[in-house]
Length: 289
Image 1 (cartoon, rainbow, N blue to C red):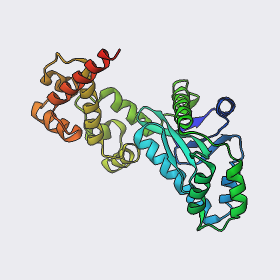
Image 2: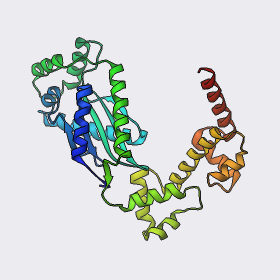
Image 3: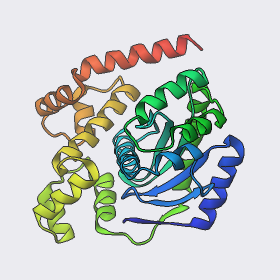
Image 4: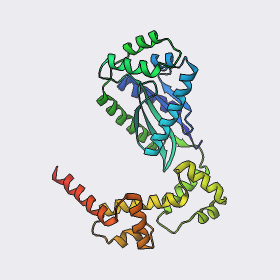
């Protein structure tokens, strides 16, 4: 685990979130383990569902999958869980590394109680639980609109950003993945290779690949290319007067033709077409003001 959390400050913030939204909010670490929540007790619907070990196991799998989705998106992910309740999760990040997650749920969000109970009853049919008690718990839950869920997910994303900016989730020690990530983030436009990183951090290529795959979902070379292309996209939008070759060089591509090939493979279009699209988007945005 890369990070540790100031739980005292964190719990105070979670209480404020609950006072504003009336929703339970939870913090998971980077391994999908629950660290703290407010209120501590889960919703009545979930307590009933989790009386079946199979349902409880499915809840854990559902949480882990949601964490993975939020990590890949790098933004809040809202979804219906396996039992039909609405939940949302946002990643906590340091650089390009996910160090934890904020999560709210388990929300009864349907156009009507009848429609909601029908959906939940069908999804929970295989589980050995008290269906009458579950129905009573569902009908006693607040009926929350989709618009409200969207607004709360935006607030949660802001809370996640605040936690990282204020370092309420702080790095306990700069472990190797954090050191590597910080170095790459500072030098990805320079000549840098897996061999360079191995020499600098005194590790083997196999171990470096394991770190890269775990934190970025790809190899180091691909991660560096992705960072360079993201920077190229920004520069094409911000500096339309630059030559394509100037943009390529500023992003760390010494070979112009290679830059064109990589950019097109990742974005689906040439740098020139991307810049034209960015210009149109900017013009449209300005004209609508």
